[in-house]
View 1 (cartoon, rainbow over the protein chains, first blue to last red):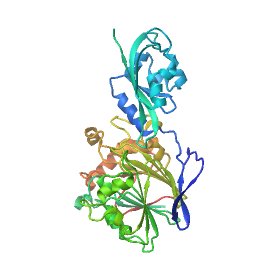
View 2 (cartoon, one colour):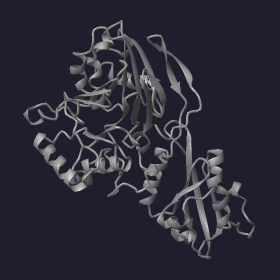
View 3 (cartoon, rainbow over the protein chains, first blue to last red):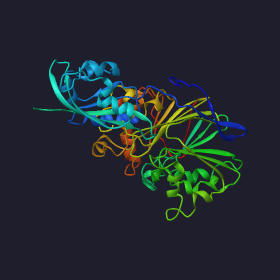
View 4 (cartoon, each protein chain N blue to C red):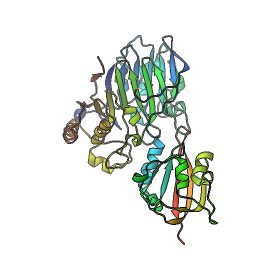
Length: 158
Length: 280
């Protein structure tokens, strides 16, 4: 059982031959949650730019159409922590003011567990400035646990 | 531990002369630990035959359901310990997003689908949610995780003193891709299957059949072998055969895929009535 990280044991009120049946705490192993896996698989098939973050806000995937907006392939950037991806594209509002990470739809969806939408400007890693519209929603898994959030970004053409 | 296959077929029981070798009953696998713990994996039609051979002094049995499709629960009504007040039966399985396991099971174990209500069973019955759990059952540490198959479905990992076992009878890790993703952290079920001594895995289709049934929740035999390789399983038992695959077809599938994949681990197809032993 390499990779398991037990933090304790909780007794469960059922017995077998005098021995307690033990309900062990949830252990986390490296595999992503199934809902994230399915969302990534879906995103990889969509012609809409999609970004996917895990429950900690790490950007764990963006699809080919998102690469066109960001100007960099996912294979080149890899996974990024929230503090990095939320600022590296220098999001700004229509007046040119920097948008704080907490005001980005994807961060709102993750932190407040509600859908969020916003139109703003980003500068891609290719140096091109683009106006985009982002729609984000939280991913609440089958066990009703937050497993991440997803945002679809559409470039707004003048 | 001993692993006995009482039902190996997928989707629909398929008795007849064409399925004598690999079996026609649907999913049911009995696991016996070296210290006497008995766990039953799924309750397909193979469960009825298994019930005939249970010890008369049985005190407790744990039935682990991967999901509630009919080929995995149809044997429940014929599970002899249900009707024995001296036996403690623990049912484990996934809840849905709106119903707990007991509520879901009651839909089958009640008229008009079955004459006996779940609440009328004579045994001491305990129903546990196992959507994503880690529990100790006798000598086994049992882990369940949601895996890719339509509806709430889990795979189980059992680790005991003599070895480990992963059971994923209905599983589509490829999800439409020609191949599995190279990063196993992004592959459904990998945390259940990783480095187990025996992997019992969905092998329902040929490659051609899979291409026509993407999203149905099953794997080709080749994908099962690739999944086993990526997760460094030490032994693969292909399982959950398509009803349309008779013994000859399965032999051909097995030989062709072993030749194509050249797996570094043994591949032993699950056969109804046969027992595999893990550890000494």
